Image 1 (cartoon, rainbow, N blue to C red):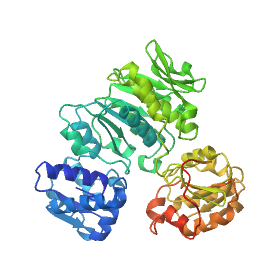
Image 2 (cartoon, rainbow, N blue to C red):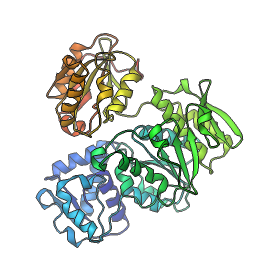
Image 3 (cartoon, helix red, strand yellow):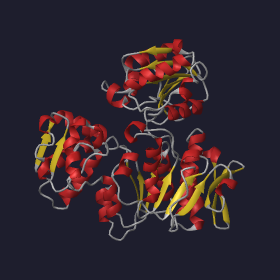
Image 4 (cartoon, rainbow, N blue to C red):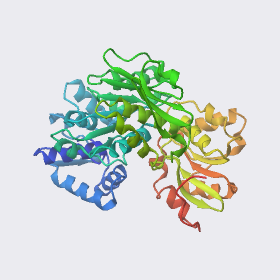
Length: 481
């Protein structure tokens, strides 16, 4: 188990230990047990602190060996199976793992385990943006009409369910998987129903360019096992990548019905989401009722409804009940989430926006003047679109250190708005400056536009703790605006 404190390592380790395996060896780059415990707690953010501690204690008590820090990968050549984290290939110290794989030692993953063990219907959702929200919307809709639904996969705030899935021998449960590009690379089979929400430039440094990134996302349709592909006709990149493989049925979501062509799917009409299956149509959800703000979330809702329409196991009369449940979903943690209010200013946490495109969507969703806190590492994605908002929707940029931050600053300067960028060294300092810069009616938005912000700048406790420091705000409201 490589990265035993991670979601992937911990979940499969627990499953193997419960199944009776006695030679499960854990490896982790963290040098000490306290640091491993902290990494485990952050990776399992969906669990409470006490539950996370109990789970780690159970894991450590079951491992045959634990190799930390300098002993990382010691003895790895003796293994018969490697279960790494999804980002294992990005670490320089994992050269030994690459050699093992070249020798033919089998590698395995959490997503692959879900696909191998689940006996009921499985839906997989991937995409550059919106996959977490679309997965959560779909799971919420299914839970309104089905007794047993699991939401698992990539999002660390989801409570994983591998052991529960394995116990469902009758196949009564529905499994919704959020799947990242890195997890797609580790899969050798696909869910029965796969969806790409959209594709925009992302992880280009990992894939060596846009073509390889698009090909990676397309694996959800092209691997064995996929029978239905749900596609976004409004997204030129994913739609323009070509037709689905032979034998895979197409279901489409779009704003306009004409974009569906002959396919089943979901579209908008007179402010309603309409689901089409064969010759039947149902207006199932008034989109103004969505608690999720922004056009991008309307697209996420259309995707979730198209997925519901794609499920042959779901009776047509049950669709309106499932659709109504979607309207009640609130913004997920770290996704344009209102977390504080003070002196007429709303403070939003959008930590999950690690690309400039998603930060642009957040700024436009708020539809007011924004003081933007951002920065981080470099994904080799252009910042031009975000830079054009500075001096318009974005009143001021507070930029924390990072290789991506340097490129963002260069883009803003090229757009003629460099004077509106202040470089700051800490999240706490950024929050203090944001308080002085924001005016009543403004929003302060933490939206990194780069990866690596969490690991680099959350060491002192994060955004909310910085906001609480010295603040006199009443309890935050539950909605934006």
